[in-house]
Length: 179
Image (cartoon, rainbow, N blue to C red; front, top):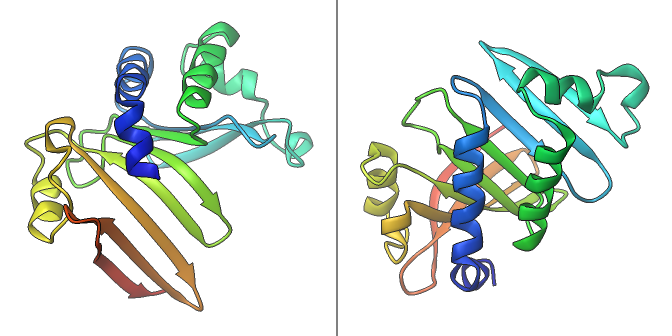
């Protein structure tokens, strides 16, 4: 279903990515979660990570989401537009990595998160060496022109495993290690 969701809503995904590219600050790694009743902005500025919360049990002990919006030079309208774009593709979180590190995706959109399991779309520059490595391991090239790889990860019993979908819809183990 997540790959079908991407294919059916491709234009909405691309619109969200274009919006993020225009509006997220350069040289930062920014995570924004806007659904399931807990909104936050998590900003990694030169290795100093700060979370800004709204509607959270941590609200009294953490900076407000308004402070996070100010730091990335956003207003509530821009944040509302992002939330609307995430909701349109039934997504939970977007991470935009503007640090220039080609080994990590430049954007990741979480489709589903259930305790120890995560489904996400990772977007890489088409010429990214990491994308080429994922394709070499057997990840689907079906959406290669978009630079997208669909991943599902599980963390259970002290181990981490990450899989991608192949062109014939089989699961391909791409990473595994003990925690």
